[in-house]
Image (tube, rainbow, N blue to C red):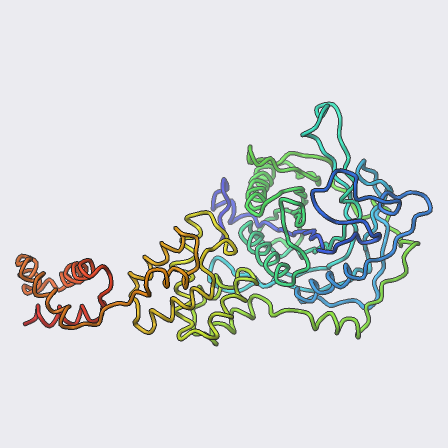
Length: 494
């Protein structure tokens, strides 16, 4: 059973959390969903607007074909069924950043339904399917600004650049039973969406936003408890923390004999608490009705086939194939497929490498560690994946040792140059296989360290490491470690 901060195991044994997530993904189109205005982030406020997205009288929406294709591609990657006919609807509510007084969305006839994401479970290393109820297409609202400008304390500024930006809303089934499962679901969802290329999923720019619905119920009870919705949380870690807080709050209210109020709440990351914002709306509160200015959306079998043809190999399938094809571990495969770009680069290198497994080991053990220590992303690495392959081949052939490779990698990061350039600049160093030179070094070290020799011959065989280290140091890392070990063992045993 997953634990939740602040809630005892006894209470978690008594109550079961029920979690569902609504994720809004901004589709990576150049123009808005119903007009030709730019979707570019960061432009001056209210500079990317027109009569259509401002909702001026007489302006009519025209559907962006690319937005539909991107949404359908995401739905296919999430194992959803694409509905051949879907209907746009008006979702009516009044808010300052919604100039039309309604949002064009989809309601009872969405673009896609009945998908799932498979997540890893924490308790037994198994898998769990989290159902996806629907994926529908809609336009975004504008943005209310409450700080960063004159009179911010007394006034709210409205930027309508985001109005009409295309979104895919992905609604999960209430299948998650812990904040950890919700975190895993969001991680897998983001990973899949990034692989399709339909969104950059940048939470800081609002390209991916998540609302969480949470309730608790006595274990064994089939009926759901009263839920609350947590809105506008800007990181997966904060979503997990907000859910933990809400579970603790719900259980506390119920244990105290109270009742949960169905409402929308905001999470304050500085305090680690949620606060009530407004009562939770029901679907009928929005007075949905079919959008009269748009025809039904028809995505026929031919169009679906064309979209499906652009579906990339998805992360989990790619991991399984790479494990079989390159002989790498599950851990290696997971790291190397975290992004599509990393996986593409690794495979490009692995296909021509003498030993793909060694390439994977160097990426994990040498490259990513250095990048993390310096706060760099993969695209900022001075060593390319081709450079990793070149270095792996040198180690594989015995031309350089592991110690030499580490030193060369250090120089690459110091000089901000790729491995081949540094290797050439250093005179193409090679490890020594000269047995006679190693024997001479071994004789000198054995003569100079009689105490350690005595310990080795008395049965402390681990002392061989001391002698190997001394020889490697004396040879400046250029001696072949395996040959060093063989020479030393022969002399010490003699």
